[in-house]
Image (cartoon, rainbow, N blue to C red):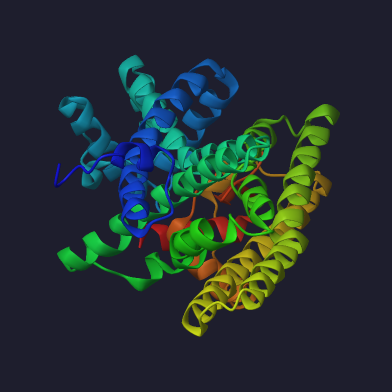
Length: 400
């Protein structure tokens, strides 16, 4: 009875705004989201294994990477680690003995078991990367459900749990990228720069649940989780369509520009005008309710960090749309093998000068797309079409 006072479970389920219950809910949500991501990975693997065009493109990307001097050191250690976990130690590759020639790689891949293992590895790798984007939609979906509740208590319960689904992932992520590296002496600020800007819900979960949701703008705050988190899974699906469309056909070109256009429109509206509207409503509400100066300053700082992150997102939306249009206009688009084996090294300095710290920092978290059409990076559902020299730089920075 000392450790489990009467009504504690009910308070947790209803997400009572008291400080002790809020931190218990945070711990529960962190564990739940860690498990949820594992389930999402398995579901995405099942889906991708039934989408044969995507699965084949994933394998072709891996084959081209294995023929590249710059790219193979990045993938072979990952493949070896995956083989160890799968109990396929007989198929571990010695990077020092690997031959980059087309003949050697094609001969290696002609063996059925090798081709199957690399296909499974590519699918799992894709699933892991996309699961991070997809899991955000759980929070958005629950927030949308909360908005349908007319009863204020029901709204607050579901809205607070929607916040915790997002916060749970962010807490788990911060433990992995900050606390554990600090404990092991492997902490690098460059690897946490983007998450620090992004994880605003983690910094603000107490003000959101205790002050903002019960206030006059509570439903606006819940709606922001739909706008920011709920759209991630649809953007992943649009990205799959764009990345694997056949650029040589009119329909394929329409699918590419249509998908990119939808991603750009959806993400820009939420990360641009809507965020500006919401940020000013949050700050004005806290000001009117005579919030303490310390809390007001903390919320303002968190909003500033998230605004900086949204500027990154909008920048990549613009660049991605421009590069997609440029690629579609280019009638002599090189093939995947030509891209991977003939990287444009000569423009490295000008590229870095143009893209500055944005590319430098996102290179740490890059999700390099494959695809016969192009390569991309993806963050929070934003799929940014890369120019060839950007592919080369990001690959090298990711390896380093």
